[in-house]
Length: 50
Image (spheres, one colour):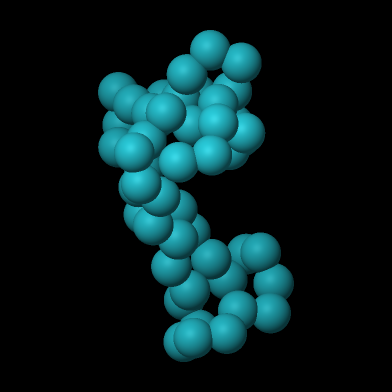
């Protein structure tokens, strides 16, 4: 996993010091099928609340 993945979600279990994602894997999904055209059409499904 790259060490430079940023996360601004303060209440995510994987958010580490310096707003870095500490998850072993990240799953990003699209709400509109296989090709999203805008950021708002995607979500991080790795999120787990603290």
